[in-house]
Image (cartoon, rainbow, N blue to C red; front, top):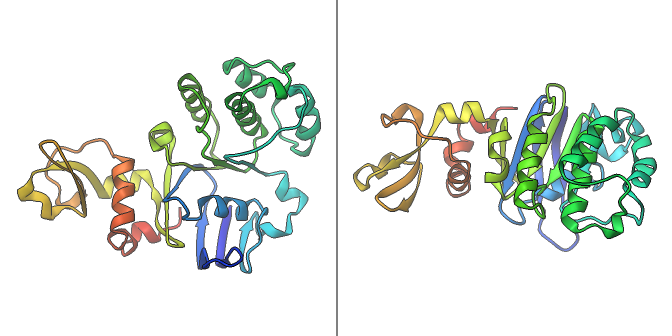
Length: 283
């Protein structure tokens, strides 16, 4: 579906963001892309979409460099950025302007989605709030049925009911032949919908695996002080430590896989994951 080969990218007058960076993502599923501020999540998405160009190496989509921006590629890729501006049109006018570039656009699905969010296609975009703009754009993105859908902080700006409706729409999508990549710091908003996890740190993908594999090989559990040495990573809490431990060494009852805790473990102790097949696998 999409891959990078020895990719090098830097912004002017800054240290390189990616050097000899390689990865491969297969079609089929919803991927969570996590990383600290400045890790390169948004830049990576823009490289995938062909909106930024690497200085060397390639980011490939559908077998061709994304930077070539072939019409077939552009019709199968859509990015919803965190910040955006929309033209002074009605929602219907926006559809007439943009939807023809995406041959698999499902207008009936779009109507259902905006109705779920309390929007009407006759409304003027200039009269809507930022959160309503985000809802309209997400509904449009879901309805495009592109092979690659990139969502950068999609729940930012959504109200509490809006986040619930976002999850409902996302869960209802057929992702068997699509790749949906979500960059977010709000893992509790989308964690239950993710099939795969990617973690960026210092220009490297320190974790790249399915959540099924990760939760089978790593447990999130509670340890006492005397057990702390079993943990790859631990955070003190009332009554002990919330910890990530290898599943093979854990005899305690398994608890729900905690994405926030696991992310913190991957950031603070990347070697524990990058030296295993879990981080090196292609998902």
